[in-house]
Length: 89
Image (cartoon, rainbow, N blue to C red; front, side):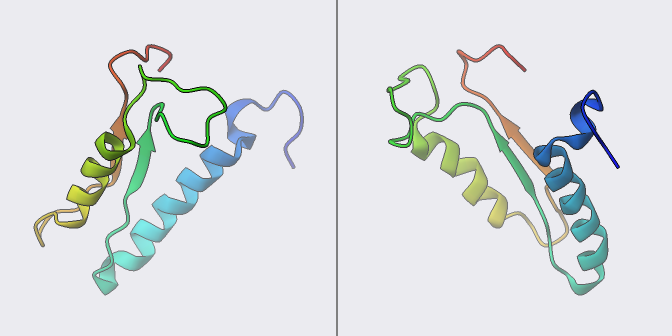
């Protein structure tokens, strides 16, 4: 059981990443490809204040959609991208 002070291991994002890795291994034999997408800041209407220095939604969507059309003999496991203005990675 994890508790305070256990660091990033208890973070839901880490658990989701781990689940994605398990799905990748379990579904590979079925021909199912699994990709984790980690975008940086995206300037969407969900934000209370606009962030024009962040990615436009269409900029963030394009690499994700492109991954769907990867060649049959290739899988993209992790797709990570950030706006040029972001430096907290």
